[in-house]
Image (cartoon, rainbow, N blue to C red):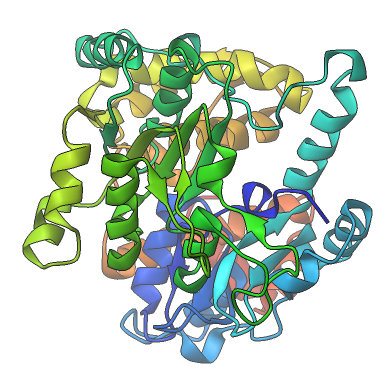
Length: 453
């Protein structure tokens, strides 16, 4: 099939190891809002899943917070090999994913190394986008930048300075290095720079260096000749460098790019040519490179994990996007913007945010930055459905206006959230909720009293 599968697969930004402790699993669940987290080994191979219900079982069993999660991992999680997906039609993939528990599957390579997650929601959005595109206005190429400066919502002086600098640089072909924590909006900047440039009518191609296994990344980036390696397509394949000709190539998480490929990227930047995998003929290219990272590249250079010559070539123009906690004036601005954006998408009628909740949102540290704020707002709007958002609609850590605590206090918070979630699922039926949690009715009532639920 010809669909760009990697563009539809969500990178696995959070995972656990079997030796991670109950405390660490609880912390990650609270920080991310995830109910299920994939578990992999040191080589990135899929082992299984760890869910909030598994964590609750550890709490019920009165496990110490230092106990590893290994015995509570669900090992029958649904996985799908990337090579099998590439042989399926979109309709077959949609049917397969819809039949999976939770309507998602973890995509792995032939060695069970995790590539990402494919969800029914992602497929549905892609399918809708294709259906809505009128044939008469078909694009010249399938790779378009989606965001402009209007999508970057801010009243912060530092952010406005970043936008002004990026817009000025956009008119030149100079490489740009975007730096900042995960979730700060680096990809938005990359799209907007492309839209502002003379290359706006050309393709905008993204390569996430962290989401593609190292042994596949070179072929994805450079393309390959027919028969270049075992399993290669007989006709060969164009790489993202060739697909981006005349446009922009956005290299996300460049800190995860292997050293050997870094040398080849440097050749592209300096010599404007490259070799496909298995090829002997240099191919000329004309692309603008925008790279992004949250990694400490200077430390990586010192450890010989990132090439100094590539760093200085990319460092000509560096934009550092501040985290949300350093531009608190944007928090409520973004929160209200998300309400406006998401109401028609979620079919909700949320009108605003209670004053006390606004204060908590403002005080919270937002370790996941704008991405986390958007996810919190979406979750809250789904729960509230209408009216103003209250603390009941938001994660407990927001109400505390601080990151979750440590040790047993952290586990208590998870336990309270699991009790509340189970009550919602059973429409307040306490007997059924106690049965689902695997505890006696009297123990359940004691916990409700303990947490004032």
